Image 1 (cartoon, rainbow, N blue to C red):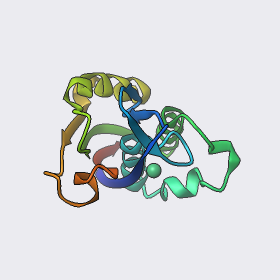
Image 2 (spheres, helix red, strand yellow):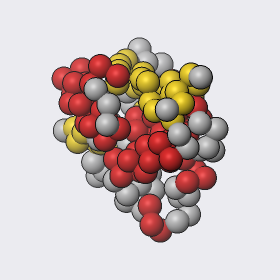
Image 3 (cartoon, rainbow, N blue to C red):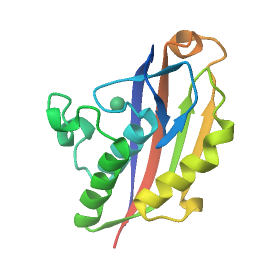
Image 4 (tube, rainbow, N blue to C red):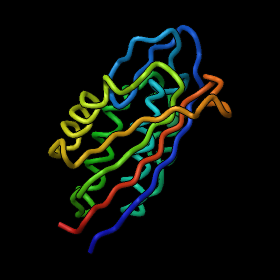
Length: 158
Ligand code: MG
């Protein structure tokens, strides 16, 4: 049986923070703010995976009240989510994600993000799709105040 999951996340942009998206550090004046490294794309992917297996959400497994996850590398959280999925008897079929951010341009970093995510998840790079868009200067993304990520995945019984 194939099951699908959806994930969504938002983080605020702030000065003096590193911009880390899809496990890739990107040169930027502003970075995403959060309890962990605020990797909005990885957080959406984690929620999609957990959702597909009906295993709750990122807040259940990695509460932001827990000091363990303060400043955490989200790649480590994603690896943990992979273990949860596999322990529940599922294999990941594919992931597709879209990131909305006004600047900087993400296109030069997309391949590196796909490579990084597929390595963490033990997938081929063509099983992981990452797309980027701006918000045409509309809303909080358009004003450069934050980033939004959406992810969907399919998993199947092993
Ligand atoms: Mg988050």
